[in-house]
Image (cartoon, rainbow over all chains, first blue to last red; front, side):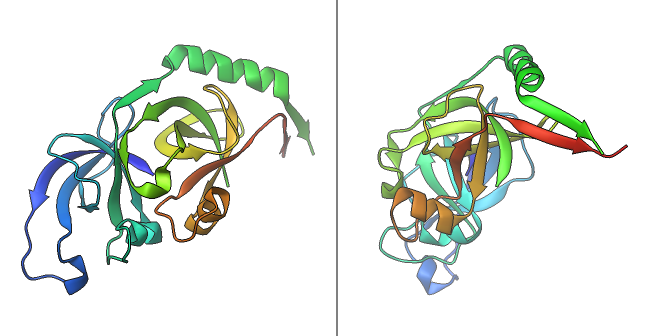
Length: 110
Length: 92
């Protein structure tokens, strides 16, 4: 799954009948600092998210299972609303990773 | 599976039923040289990984369903292992 921010809404009356009653939002994929990651996409909303909210969404085949009880023809579906994100400080993490590399990686040359 | 490092976690109270009692972590892909590549994703943790751990992330719905014990779940990324040791063979 990935993080995303809802930046718009789409209304479509002419659509696949299985998409009936499914809200469609314009979603901008973002990283943990809400910086853009890739182009905006259209995603089906199954949890009642609102404009501007940080959500997490799932793509590919799994997106079709997002609507409880039925399958929807979608390749991106919002599956949850984020309350809070915590991410480690970049430098601390880089330091921990290089420590981990020195301690736990063995490099052999062939 | 993919090699990743856990950079944080997220809390969520409104979610699809399949995510009930799931621990959601923020992970970033890394290569065997421990260089992060900026690809941040959300993964369900099934092995109690902590922040800063190097982990294995499976990215497929069937696997996620098996891990969560449910069928047809809208879950793709699941942390399935914590890496203890990594040996890399570098060609000259």
